[in-house]
Image (cartoon, rainbow, N blue to C red):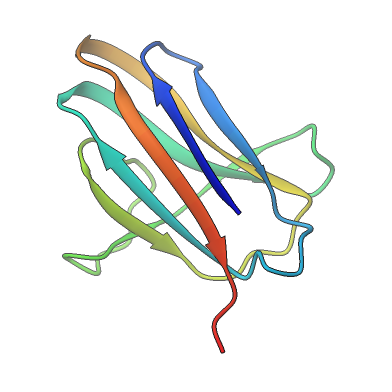
Length: 105
């Protein structure tokens, strides 16, 4: 599954399905300068979402908040759906977020 969306205001989000057999791992690419905070949030019921840590591929240090361009990953998550949500937006251009779920092997 691939999804791309431009997020430019607080509470903008891109929602995607985790119940798919192909949704074992998540890759998130963020492009665009600005001052913003994004979070990967997951839900077991599709209604209540909770933030989870992601790992920037360039540093390998887990973080809850994405605050700039880069590529981030997350291991398999059991759940119904997930979203990348802009939890804060201060200034600058939009963050273009591309999410890809995949199965390895």
